[in-house]
Length: 288
Ligand code: PZK
Image (cartoon, rainbow, N blue to C red):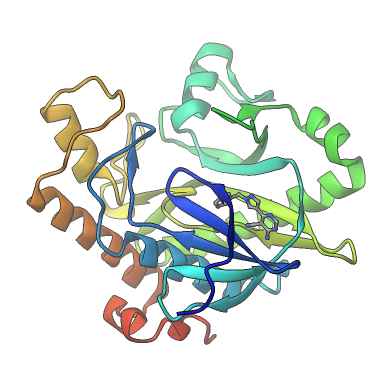
């Protein structure tokens, strides 16, 4: 096994290691978070699904923006990446009215300062996708900011380029997903600059952990939509009660298996590649 490198960061379900000066290792665990709480029961191969999907999208969006991916490790759950100067922003792109966007709209008639027509329904498709940037809070939750403030934070020119990239990536991902029976409701991107100052896509991209995926066949505006990947877990948590406070509940085997199957199915629908082939050889997602 190669050097894991020096541990330099933890996300809720991922770890970040330094590989020398200018490379990083992004490792995705099998942990799952529901209602913002990481559960004690892992979903086997979830980290591989997310890593494989990210690598799939990185390989297919290079015409929109270059990215930090250097290599997929043979374990299928970790990516070697170029170290970038990260923009201190998350680029959230919303194509549908869901989550905090819906709550914001119901309260104010706008989403993060973007005024919208009256009478839109929960989960309705927006007239056009919106970019709603957020600052990455060191601890706790990300804070939505206006596009004007985001532009001030990173400079107007860099902001304008990054928001166009985010919209193009969303458009590409949403069209690809839609042709395969999945609605990409919204997603978030993280971008950085390489040593030459070129904008690069980083982090994970267009995965279930960074996006809202809905099954297209049951989509109907006018209420909340089931999550493609986490709905079994959410339903079970709701049924068995609990206060959504940490530590979350242990999951029963049938919920684990059902959820694992949903992740594998999302991988197969989006990539067109049998998940077993990815497990056998993770490099299969890199071929165009
Ligand atoms: C970077 N994160 C977030 C993700 C964590 C933390 N290519 C890059 N260059 C420099 N920094 C980062 C990246 C990327 N990607 C990403 N923090 C820094 C993050 C996963 C796990 F602990």
